Image (cartoon, rainbow, N blue to C red; front, side):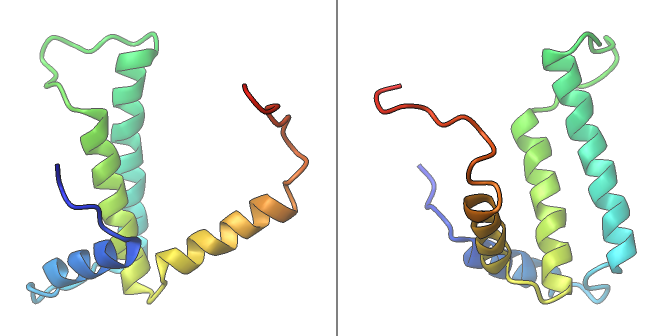
Length: 112
């Protein structure tokens, strides 16, 4: 079993990796393009597994887990390049869901 990492540790690990290279982080717009590309690859795999579009015999099998990992890596790169703490971003969004959207969905009753 691998060690559990905090979001901060993930951001630091990605920054340490990217910092090895002279090129550093790509520009925010280039990373947005990469995010879009990776999201498309995830969508394609999900469609092959759960949708109506079977994979071509010439297409290699990719794991959905890996595609989500690729997307997460680029998102962390984008956040790092803009000096955004993803833990703080998460907290802001969860606060929004727990306040503004608290009555939006039907809650499960205890025992469900």
